Length: 251
Ligand code: PGA
Image (cartoon, rainbow, N blue to C red; front, top):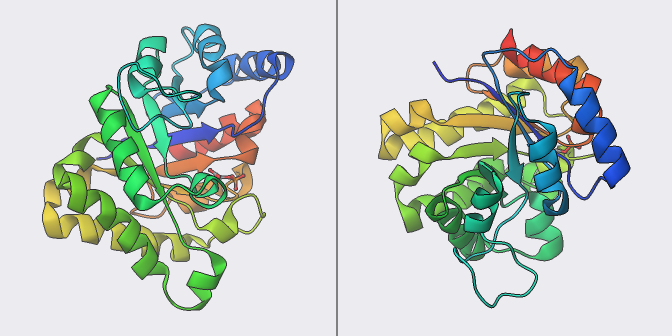
């Protein structure tokens, strides 16, 4: 049995005041014991959030890491080693906003994935198709290629210590959610692609769905056999809403 995970991606949100408010809210949520709950604040707030969540059984991750580990001359970047030293456990790799807006390529993301693990973090590899790609019938091809870039470079073994998030780009922040069936189809294809290499790794890896997940639609998504939880953007900024999504994953 895979343990469900619900991860909150705060993106570029949060002031000191709003983060304090959110931490207070999260601290008073009843979270289910059988679910791994993680939040990904902006790096600026990581230490504050780790301090504020002491004793709350919520892990903290970062939204990005450098392509290199350790320390060095790389202005503006933060390494996985530094994030792990601060108390982070996971890191997002390849969120569509970073692929599309920042221009991160599969090649760069492979290096970040590798650096994440080398620095002691669990990478959450985000993959997903655009609306044009879906409409052209290319969803599985695009997602398959994004996944292959990591498998080919690092080997299937890399997924023994990783999480995958399927996030259709057209569903992120749009209020449009993939139907449970649409999401399940892609999740099953991802797992099948991993299984070609190693069935044990394929069965063990957690596949999260992301894209306009909210309390109202979480339960039906999480009820699908290959959906092991969610990566939540907008709704993770509201403690009650996020708590309700975590509880949906626990049922
Ligand atoms: P959303 O974002 O829940 O606001 O659609 C999801 C994500 O980008 O991780």
